[in-house]
Image (cartoon, one colour):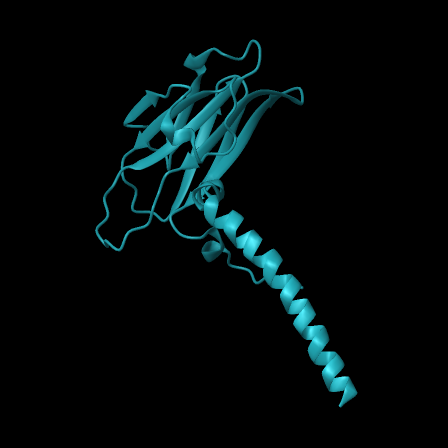
Length: 171
């Protein structure tokens, strides 16, 4: 009887402490839910010369799933680019989505409201809203290439990326 009472009190104390921490964590998460969702759809790539970063590109895929089976919306990305000194010759760079060129590239101002929930925003980067034609593929590959520094590949998906994992997780 004593053991049962002690075990019950112990469980009650543990549950009480856990629920306070859990509710604080959930509150924090829900307040920044948009930030966390966009963070999951953000990738970064760096191009190097002699092990020194010359160009860094970040891209956030602005896709929100819908129930529409015939969704033909364009593919939108917010792309940030940071050139190190001497690497800013913009004519030698290209950006392709699944081998397709962008339809439109729009420069964004520093105070653009779309930056609110984005990570990797810095004051020394240049940011663009890049629009690509609709892709039926659920896997998207964004290729950033420089004539001088090579190319970097960023992988995005319209569904959770683990759906494309073919091997089982090892223990």
